[in-house]
Each structure stands twice: as C-alpha cells, then as structure tokens.
Image (cartoon, rainbow, N blue to C red; front, top):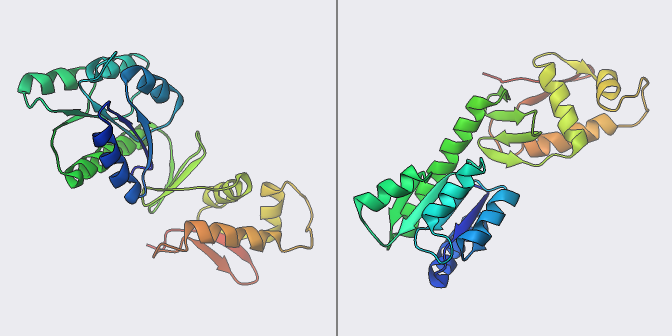
Length: 229
C-alpha cells in the first residue's frame, strides 16, 4: 500500500477528487499544479507514486517525466490524459512513464493502478538492496526502514537497534544481560526493567496487529526472534 503520492494536474476539480479518494484510503497526498513545481517536489520529497496529467502549462507531463528520469528519480509515474491515442501512450511511456490511464476514469481503477505501481516499485527496490527478511518482516539496514506485510513500521533508534540485535541472533535465545550490553552498551545489569519495556514496545509495533508473532521469550532465560513456520 502506498503511503504518500504526488498529484500533478492543473485541473483543480480533478485534483480535489483524486486527493479526497486517496486520503480516504489513508494515503498522504502532495499537490502541484504545474510541472516545474512538481519537479521541485519530486526531487525534495519521497513519494511511492506520482500521478501526472500530460497536458499542463509551462512543462507538460511528458517533459516532467523526462526531467525527473534525467535527475535519476525512479518513482513510478502514472500519466493521465483526455487523449486516448496509441501515439500519446507510447510517447508517455517512452518518456519514463510507467502506466497510462485515460480521462474520465473510475477512481477505483486509478487506486488499483497506483497500488500496483507501488507494489512493483517496492519489489524492484527489494531485489536491488540487501535486506534482512524474516517471514513478512523486511528490514532495510541501509535506510533503516522496517516493513511488515508491506506496511511501514516507525521505530525509535533504540527499538530499531533492539530489533537488529534480535535478527542478527535469529532463533537464538539472548539473555537480558546480552541485550543490555549490545543495545545499551552497558556491561552490567542496570537493575531496571528497561529490556522488558522495550521488548513490549517492539512487540506492540512488530507483532500486535499481525497473526504470526515473531518475538518470543523463554521464561527466566531471555528473548529471541524466529519465524514459527
């Protein structure tokens, strides 16, 4: 599921309609009404998908695609156009567009295409990056991002370090003292329940809403993470 998209269109009614539908589906939306503004946003922001009209003032959607691809931005672009011609579609796709939909369109079709582009983009990203994967949990150690079932999970730095330590010891029970030493960099028992507290924080974010529980404990011994399958 995409988290954030950019809509580029000078037709305010179209923008309002798409924006409303996306927000109702828990997708954050930025808006630009021309290609130049969109180019600045695309460079500075992180978007899962960009929706761009083809016909716009100052810079067309085709030129916008060419510009961001030249800048090395690989965010998927879904092009919109009232012109339902094969030549227009070919031009848009050759310019760097990833999909094309003709106006007028049903919002549900647009949403399905946006979701498909986001999934495809994430799959491509994962194929090119050395991620840590356990069941449906994916950790990108380069960007320090965590996903479960393709849903991004926000962790604090300490929660992230605790998760990485458990993953690096996958299937092995690690004692509380080991966790304190490697995650908090303290060589003695603090006499507090800080480990239990942070394990609970992590479980609430990583496991609570999902059927399969990855973070386990062995009573009186310690904690471990494993795929129960």
